[in-house]
Structures are given as C-alpha cells and as structure tokens.
Amino acid sequence: MPDAVDRAILRTLQLAPRAPFRLIGEIAGVSEQTAARRYQALRRAGVLRVIGLVDPAVYGDARWVARIRCRPDRVDPLARALAQRPDIAYAALASGGSEIICVISAPVHAPREDILLRQLPRASAVLDVTIDLMLHPFGDQGLPGDWTGYGDPLDAAQLRLLDPHRPPVPKGPPLPTTDADAPLLAALAEDGRVTQARLAEVTGWSPARVARRLVALERSGTLFYDVDLLPEPLGHRLNATLWLRVPPAELERVGLALARHDEVAFAAAVSGTHNIMASIACRDAEDFYRYLTTRVAAIGGIDAYSVSIRVRRLKQAASLITHGRLVHSPS
Image 1 (cartoon, one colour):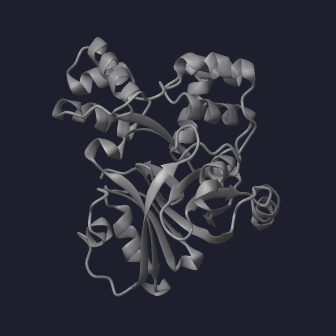
Image 2 (image 1 turned 90 degrees about the horizontal axis):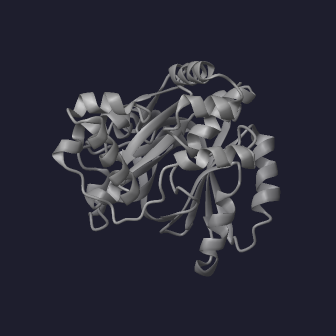
C-alpha cells in the first residue's frame, strides 16, 4: 500500500506528468533524490506508467466501446488477441469472464466488421457483440488515468506550485504528425517522462527544436499525457464498469457529476441504450454498494443502470498488464 509520500507523487504526476523531480519532492515533502527513487520503485513494480499518446482524431479516428459476450471456456485467446492490437486502447474481462470490454480507435464511417473483427479469425467463442460510439468524455482531461480514490487531493498551495508545469489546455485543431515526429512519439509512448536531452538524441534534433515541437503538439491537442495506474496494488480490488441510461437533457449534468467522484476513473457519453459508461474503482463489494446507494443514488435523472464487474484487466492506454504489472505495449 502506498504511504503519504507515494500518494502525493502519484497525484502530482496525474496533474503534471512531466513535472521535474525537484518540484515533485517539494510537493511530497521529500528530497529530489527521494522523489525520483520512489517514482522509479513504483514504475518498476508496474503500479504506474506515464505515457505520451497521440489523439486518435489526428488520424481521423473516433473511439468505440465494444462489449463482446463469449463462451467462458473460449474467451482467453480472443481477449489476448484483442489486447495485442494497436487499435485497442483498453481491454478487460468482466462478468465472470464471459464478457470482453474494449475501447477501439477506428473511423466513424467504418463498417461494424472493420471496427472489431478485421485481422481476427472468425471466433466461435463469440455469442454477441455490441459496439457503441464514444460521443463525449466527461471531466477535465477526458481520458483514463485521473482516478484519485487512493488518497487525499493536494491542497491549494501545492496546486499553485504545479500550475506552471501542467500540460497546456489544447487550443486545437490537432496538428498532423510527420514522419520526423515518429522517434519522438515512440519514445514518449514508452516513457512520457523521457528527458528532452534523450528526445534530442533519438530524433537527431537540437534540444531547442525538441522543446518547440513538444509545445506545438501539446498546445494543439495532438499530444497528451496519460498516467496509467493499477488500482489493485493501491488497495482498490473491486473494479467495475457502470452503464447508465439517462435522458438526453440530463447527459451533461449526470456525466459531469460522475466524473467528479473519487471512485470514477473515467466517464463518457456513448451511443446505445445505456448512454453513459463509467469505470469505477472501489475497495471491496461493500464499498461499491455504498457508492451505488449513496453517491450514484444522489444524482437525479438516471433511469436505469447495469454493472459489469471486471475480472481481469488486459490493457489500458499504451500498457499491457502482465502478471499484475503495467508493461510497455510494443504495438
């Protein structure tokens, strides 16, 4: 379980993924060297990864949410094949191992078969498939990784220290990437905290050119940073996807209310009968029950809900999950 120093480091990285260790140590109340050592220990343990990612919209893609109901005795090979695909940003087994939930990047106009089943053999394990378009993410970043249920938020003074180091608010539209950007983006996908000196080495650019390109990509929204966290080592062993049915007039209000909950890692409006999905992390079944019957119940306007209890996570963002550790996905 993380102590107060680890929790401060984790929250600092969520808000300012490339903040220098000197500042991280100041906020956590430790030396720069201790902050770096603690961060590296968490990273080696596979508890967190800081990753630089390209917005799928740059390539003309949208995000889709697929729910694949399978025969439990045949689900593993299909789930692992999906997790290895570069167009799959998230994959998990749920509902007792009979359902795969995944997030896919694909064009809005793509045929249903192309979104999910291309490059895969016809699978007799599949009993039913639903694919819904992710319409709008809720919250400040709109991306997985902003879960704060593991500890207390930073205070106002600490947040002020972080302000100059937070990623800029995207002004859009996203800039297109070039072939010359490929080494830069590959290095950031492996380690979002890689130094500018190292980025200059892999690109062959000057440090000043690296800095200018990073700022341009970040400000346009092309490049964003995600902090992958595993909730289980942080004491939150029950993870679920909550599917809500909400009238259109209530979508924004309900979605924003959910996104503010500490238990919610991600919330978005989606097409389909249940038009809000939320990824939930709780300590145990009783904690989840309390969350449903107090915090969710206090949000008016929800007509119906269903729950998919996550059994095993296979991939999130650019990280595969192997033996309970986040590892770089080479895809």
